[in-house]
Length: 474
Image (cartoon, rainbow, N blue to C red; front, side, top):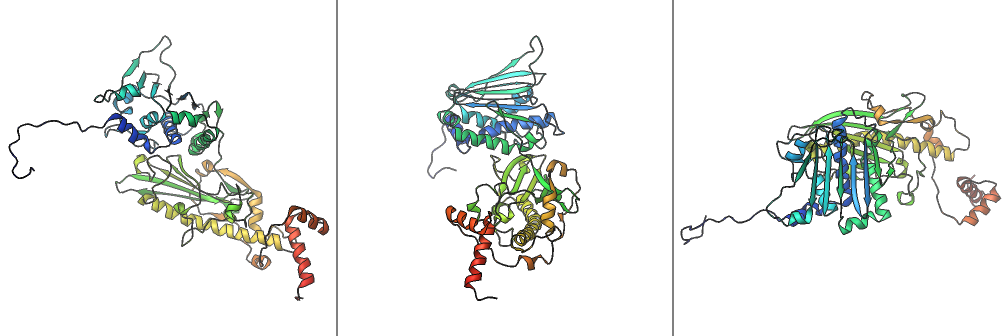
């Protein structure tokens, strides 16, 4: 379409419409945090571990990370990148439609490695061997930017040495780092945050035997456990639920839910959440996508907490609540996670269905914890010591042992089971709880005068003294 009165076209020119490389890099890396970029690189290693060991046994595999102000390096022995893959799509900005996929992988859009490398520094080397091939890609990003129309990278193909190809694996070096990355790697607080994120996000891989190190220190396992009664599974056994969903593209997502209680907690169940530093920190929902942790100890509306027909607002009486959700898809695009794999898309239809099942499962656990609170109140207020039969849930939890979710994965689907609560317990637990702060010296004096040591006994003694001297009740 041309404007009225336009003359004949005398020439058609091609105008540049492609992206400027620096603009492209800035846009690509703008919304990803440094820790998330490093996690993307670890994702690639874990995906390679899955391809190498489909049975999930990662014993003998390792990922070593060096993150210091001068440089960044990550190396693994998880199989390496094939020459064909490196040549055809690994270094492409986005995944070509004909690129072969890896079932149940973490990598999704084909930008994770490139985005991470551009985020971290101004030059990088990628060296990888599979035992059948060996290549190296070296790129000075600033020099590459100065050639606007050439987006290719040089890939050096190595033949076998005297002893054949190097051991399977991939090593990446980034040096020099950008100033902000260098500053982060020199900050102890930020490095501790990175350590915690690596340990948390890849807790499943570490549990399966993968050794993950940061600056020479191995990251310890974080047990994924629920409590099962030592006496009988009928006394206490977590809920185990499995089902499959289909997204609007016809892709299948398999879902597993494990929900129950953890038998040990130091939280004061009547304390306000803001008054407890760590007692309930581990409570809540843990949500995984293809074994990558997306949500940890979540107690927000995102996983159904908050009242109004859902789970209640979180309070420390629910400090024993544990729920684990595993979403697995052969095509990772079907999973309801965000592009940085740091959370879920809360409006995704798949997530909304999963969340609905989580709420149903959570309500069963909440009911048990409400009964448990009633028992604890009875134990605190009863004039005489209560027998285990009077507080059966407390007794079962005292005898329970932690069982890993990996073991529960071999169990058939079943509802949560626990010994029945004592129907007459409410009579023993009837009453009000009184909580207040006093000066330490005054507390010590009152405790000495009463001949007790526990705060609960001081409270009962002082209240009893007041009622004896000031009340008209018989």
